[in-house]
Image 1 (spheres, rainbow, N blue to C red):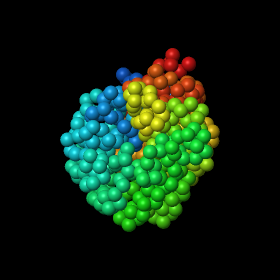
Image 2: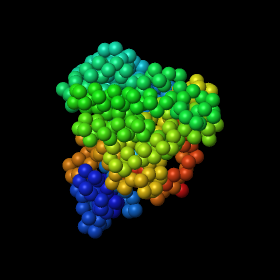
Image 3: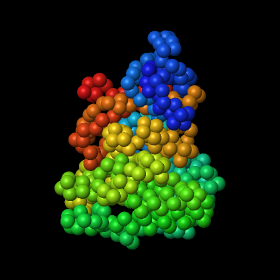
Image 4: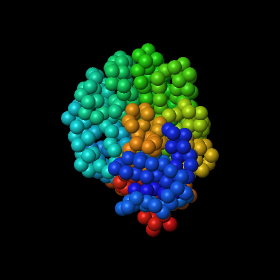
Length: 435
């Protein structure tokens, strides 16, 4: 394949230039100026005209819930990877809160095998910290790592037991993988359903205070400093959390963190504006405008290391209930790129290079996978983006099995138009779909 005349943006090699990209046998074979050999594609090669488009290292989503095994009515490995491809992601890491939990060699091997059989993008399993996610004893982490696990987490639940977190951070140093924690003090969040503040009071909904997250962040950072283990904090949402991480990094704590598109774009006011729509209910909840601005600053100054969708599919029947009773979670694989392109890049919050770093190189480095670059010899995982393409979000056209998206009807600029995995096009936006 020859990807011709695109703007190649590759922070790993400090590249931002118009060039041709030649792919051979699933790897990047050559990067050359477009004027060199224009029109001279190798015999039999497919030519993808990328003039005016961004050609990026394949995007990596490090926080995805595929639901399989056990919850296939919400999502499957097949449908989830097709959603990822449609969203421009060439690699995803799937969380362990399936049924049964991914807490053993057998479940990890099942996910790896199904991904090879039915998946269209690279799938990297994340195993449980604890057996069954119950927070009582360590899962079989060594076995899972040898079977393909790239990190451990009890996501969906915090690692509430500080001693267990200490053991996990110490043990995972043997394997060089991070412990990913969902930061929440459940004695504070209790039965809350949205951010605790003015809007929750007006709506009459029980709140989840910012302190619920911030106390857990402080505890995690203290344990990480003690153990010198690799800590990654998932979906941070408050100013206080970001300030704690910023200080910890300055003090030399080995910590990384991520933010989600919905926390970067929406606030708790969305719950009121959407008239209690359960598709605005997620955990951590949408916070206030001050917290959202703090997250944007964290993107700019490097405190935040990755943007991740926290793609959390639910069947329509589960969300079609009162706000209090609906499950937490929204889908995001197919909206992450245009949301960040429109609301962060177009708005001047992020440079193109920083966008690629947060969505490709950053998560690849955190997970320790050999992705996130277009250097010669690298895997030919490529995401092609049209920065000027304007489309409306239409959940009826999603590849995901679920539709729990708060962005339906949003008009956004900057969409992925081609996704290439190992030199093979796994998704391409048809011309009719770009109008």
